[in-house]
Image 1 (cartoon, rainbow, N blue to C red):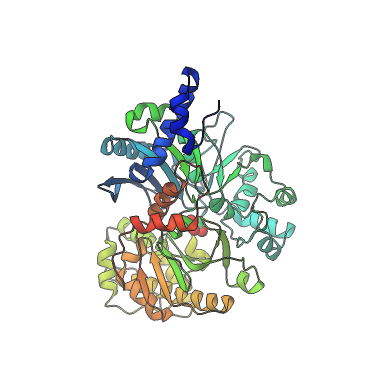
Image 2: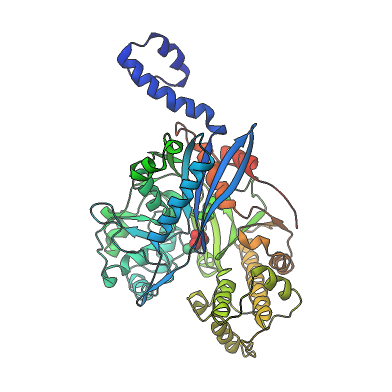
Amino acid sequence: MAPRELGDLCFSCAFADGAENDALVLRWRVTEIDLLMGQAARVAIDLGAESCRVSLLRWTNDEPSVELIHRIPNGPVHRGSTLRWPLDAILAGLEDGLRKAAQTAPEGIASIGVDSWSVDYVRLAADGSPLCEPFCYRDERTVASKEAADTLIPPLELYQRTGALPLRINTVYQLLADPGAGVDAHASWAMFPEYVLYWLSGRRVAEYTNATHTGLVNLKTRAWDAELFRLLGLDAEAAPPLVPAGTVLGPMRGSLQRSLGGAFHETQIIAPACHDTASAIAGIPEPLDATAYLSSGTWSLVGTPVTAPVTTREALDARYTNLGAATGDLCFHTLVNGMWLIKQCMEAWAAQGRSWTIESLVERAADCKAAAVIDVDAEPLMLDSDMPARINAELARLGCEPIPDAADNEPVFARTIFESLAARYGSALASLERMLGRKLERIHMLGGGNRNKLLVELTSQRSGLPVEVGETESSTIGSFAVQLAAGGGASPVTAGNVRQWAARLCRREKLA
Ligand code: LRH
């Protein structure tokens, strides 16, 4: 007799004989977890370009608490002439984080979800181990591969086919660049967060929201575009099977699970919205009808959810992309430079003994004037190293005086960056309203940048819209909300369900 559905379970138990009982006991344990799912501890791993975070959700008397229990500093590393991610250090840091989670929640962890920045991936050897250290999307090897791809399929056609803005950093151009970098183009791959899910569960998948940023998912079928793979000469067999957000991949496995002991005994590995931006949006507790989101971290993502894609020439020129959202809609947004600019400057200054905290820079920048409004999306400002000099080159291009890169001028650089980001958000929102033919009433700001009061204020001034300050760790909230909505995996994750969980988890502090 096959194990029965939930409703039949008690009845079946009463009549089961020995062998069937085993199956039923097994089923009962899973079902028990289903029933208790609202109250069990869970882990969300949010991998960021500047830091990777492990957070723990626990419940006391029906009240949830989300605690960031481990932070791993991160950043692209130079290897020869290439730019990579330090995968071994990230995984070692995640082991430490998971160990802390096991110690903090000995009652057991029901599930783990992982999200991260998009577009990067790990190629795998035949035994499933990483073939090489993964490339960082800022590596310049894709300049040539994108140019070559554009001759095979015009950018507008690609855009209309996939909805994804053809950005140089997209996975498609990275896959195309691999042979030139000595990487086996037929080796199977997994996107960065899905690689971590694979490391934890042994199951290799591509989660839909993250897959849409590859530039290889067909907008209409929502499946890998086999024809596109063929046209570009990419190996479709190397791509993982696509799954929706909220897919329960199976139990945690392997030596890590064994070594971390009891707390991970019954842990399910769940694919949340693996794209951190989609996860951050899933973490917003209310519908975004007339609200724009601004997810502010290393990058800034400015846009709003849409039910139908917009792939006009105007949208392409305005640099808007249509990426998968956790529960069916599309995230229609533009990718603007972000805290990368200030972080890069801070690193350059620290190397010269001029260390600043972001808090003191923001405070001092409030009393300065910007040198000018620069184009924050200029290609040189996307690249690694020498950021103060790169900003001065942009000023020179505009015919403006450079900012002497000397002690005490750091706040002027900071003000120039924040003012320019805010101006770009304002113009991005104006073109969004034009394209959608409707007015936006407010901005919901997420991510680390929302702690920067000056940026919040300038954004409101430049856009003419009130800014609602949302969660700083919204990707983590979104991951927990999707994990909770997924439960045991028996029914599909719905927008209403995810939003309800997000509302329970959000702190909902303040309005600015
Ligand atoms: C933000 C982000 C963004 C992508 C970029 C590569 O972390 O995922 O949504 O466009 O990284």
